[in-house]
Each structure stands twice: as structure tokens, then as C-alpha cells.
Image (cartoon, rainbow, N blue to C red; front, side, top):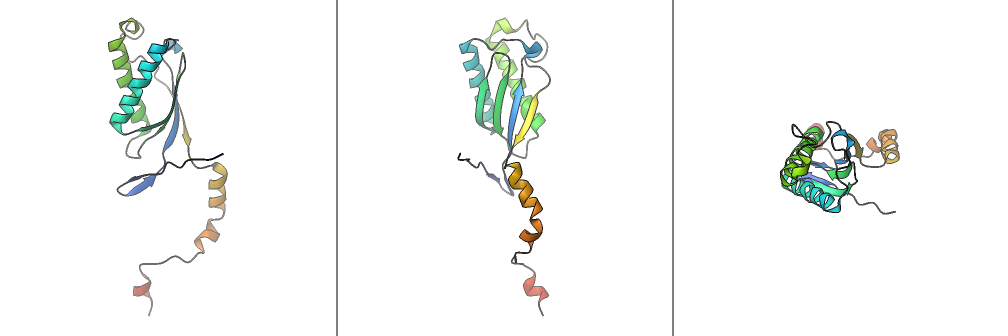
Length: 151
């Protein structure tokens, strides 16, 4: 099984902030049953993520919930990302589909909560790395200060 690394870069950091997010319509309503509704929701979520600079790795829309695997920069909090995706998509969906207005006249089309889990380097690899830090740190490292500290 081959794994693709998604290490991104900002001006002063490298990151791999991948998340699995699941959220549902209000009252867990099965409002995403029709194919044209699913494709519209998918299109809207992709537009929002593209606009904000988030990278979608997977997007799966079920009748009563949405699974999203996404990479976000560390400059954005996860709660901010979810509020943008849910808020903007709700407004666009309600605006373009008048039949959903009765479901959520006030507030969002989506339920308030969500599930989130981080996706990153394998736990076993991290545990091994942390466990063997002492050996790792014994490897000679070049120092900027060596020319000043040596007599």
C-alpha cells in the first residue's frame, strides 16, 4: 500500500494538517438523497475550499451526512474552517433550493455539531521516533556556535 505525503510549506513552516470531518443536516434529515442535490453540494464545498485555500483529498456525500478529508494550513483553526464551509454552503444551498428554506429558515441548514479526527503519520512510527529520541539526538549535528565556542 503506497502512501502519498502531503507536506505543504508556508514562509516559516512545513505542515501536514489533514483532518477527517463529518457533519450532518439539521435533525439528521435525509435532504441529500437526490443526485443533483449531492452534485450541487459537492460543487459548492469544492468552490469554498478552493476560495479559502483548503485542499480536499476526499469528499463523500451520503443521504444524511458528509465526509470530508481536507488539508488546512496551520494559520486557520479547525473550528473556523468548519464554520466557513458549513455557513457558506448552507447559504448557497438555501438560496438556490427554495424547498430547503422550511427546514432551516433561521440559521444554518447544517446541525451545530461535527466529528473531526486528525490524519497524519502512522502512530507506530511516531511512537518509535519519540521512544528513540535519545539515540537520534546523539547524532552529531552541525552548530552555528561551534566557531565561537571552540578555543
